[in-house]
Length: 435
Image (cartoon, rainbow, N blue to C red; front, top):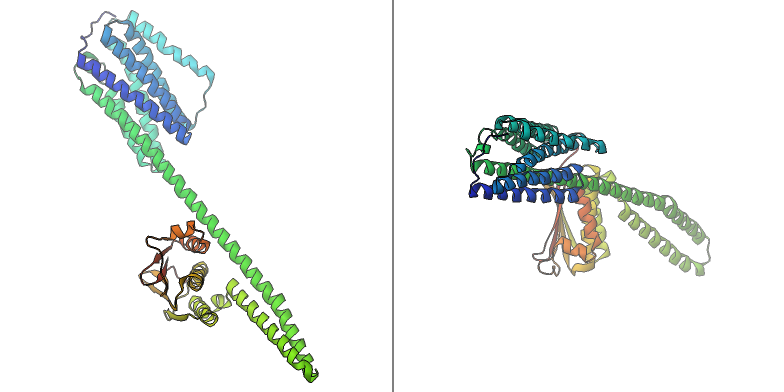
């Protein structure tokens, strides 16, 4: 080839060096993404960017020395870059596996570069085949990412697709404009813009993928949490049933037998038998209280409001608290899981009031408004430390509050604690009522 080339200006050399630095940074970025998400195609993109740096290095060497030998290596590196981009696209789209004999293709750019540099005497004939190759591969890569965006709805993939498609078209101006110095420095700047756009798109794809994985993991944890809660409640129901069918029935039979013995007992034994009957009655009441705590029958039979009212009455009888209930009448029946979660929240909140608050009165409110069912348990106790929140209580070992939040959040609700004039536990659930 005997066609002359325009002398390299210092500004053009600086532009080429700047692009090489940016491209090297993208190679490092692709390696970081590969180490982070372990997707093979990122490793191949790191290799492609690395070869692109080699290609730019050949351009820089030619601009610095004017030695035509560097054009040979520029042709070779261009072919390698095109092959690396093509392979990275195939790995991304088809999960293609590497075979050692594929290295044979790396020899093809050597042959073409030798023929182009030593046998062709027109610059267009030398440059055009490699330009068409790298442009075609870049356009194909844009199409690959566009198809991926259509399948997945990934905005990052769509951004990458546009960058590659525009970059592929931009490659075509090389033999006509850029290589003849007619578009300096804008040709380099556009290359840098497209490279950075691809890098940003890759980052967006990773972030989107991580967000999707996090959402899927959160959904999975939510389903697991709901399953654990159901199993827990199933076990409580089983224990309640066994206490009713076995222990409570046995004690009732014992009470009956003792009552029959009392009728025929000597006067001096009646007082002792009355004492025994009192102990049995206390045992039966205790078992019934445990059964009610495990699984209140009123919740299944009459609904949430009746169960909360019964629980509040029981707390008032067993403590010195003045308990007031303000329950919407009538309260629409909610799905079973929602009613159970709200009842357990009220139960846990009342237990905390009795154990920790030092309160003299507590109010339980239950109602529905604006599509939300709201439960509020408010006491007039000593309150909470400043800046306390639910997460802090959980860290301190208040597992009841953690269980309350797990149940409610699994159903799409929220739990918060207001610490003004005592403590108020506020639970809100979407009002998805049965028809």
